[in-house]
Image (cartoon, rainbow, N blue to C red; front, side, top):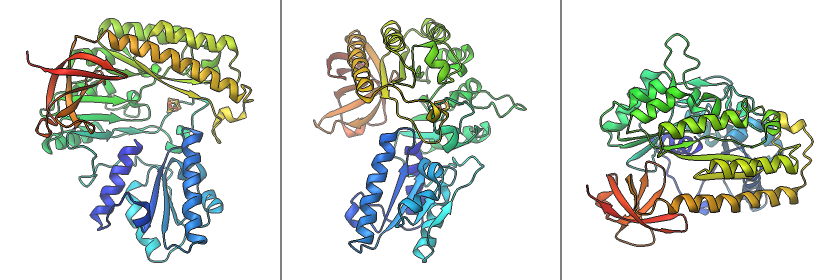
Length: 428
Ligand code: SF4
């Protein structure tokens, strides 16, 4: 979602005549698009803001500094107190306001704020500077009505709001007309799309089925899903529509029912496993990925063992595994953060090692298989090679040229090097 917001802001700025640079030293304005989900991400922004502020206040550099995204929502005008050199903040629902706010600062206005409490804030724009000519991110809903105690998203992105289905369909048709082949539908909790449309009853599975009919679009992905909203109707639509990719990201977070309850995840491990079993029965080729937090308040060695056991039993294709850190403003901030940092690190690295072995063993089984994918980019290290992103979100390096980019191709996997597959183009 943040990547899309950055593409949108950059596109709108270019439309207004600004030029983009990736060289800090050349910039007249530096805008941070921020994420508050993890402490580490915020700390990096704080560090950078400190450094640029120093350049302004001590070195006398003329520079406009702005913050957009979740940190603007999380800290609001408190950011100006911490960084007096900051010129503006723009919230998650105000990306379209970035050019207006920037121009006010250029006109001499101080400490500009654009923070709407309500609204969708995920506008489509033909000016969006997309990172690929074949694949487009497309936000279809924003916010979250769940209350996971560790999560800052309900505070920074607000309540769930879905983009009307007719609008989503129009935008995907437009992307197809512009030559895009692949689209990834985005939402903090994308599979609860449409719950705010009681009258029209357009659910996420229905929307997916509708979008699958659009000619020109050949690959449809979505992220991220909550287990409670991963329903059999959704699995059926995926199974019945070959355009929909075969990677399902379903955050588990913990294998302990006690911790899941403390996290307010709204399901038990066995309920989660029942969904996964059904999904794998209905779509055997599905690649399942997940998120795990270790060291959540109250996580005992037994709770951690339950998570380790769940990883062994379920056998995810890959997992994002993080150490818990309390996020200011979340319900879990009030819990005693009682797992020592060293123990969190130990648990984190134990699970990372375990998952690495599981991922490798699952990947090795794919050698010799034929996988369909989109030719997404050239191999930056070796000329004459391109990288296919498969329907199960694996990467296969095959012989190819720039002229192949954007094509849907099949490849036979011949080798696994670390987490990258090597293969040969396969013609049936
Ligand atoms: S469902 Fe996801 S976005 Fe919503 S509160 Fe839980 S972790 Fe956060």
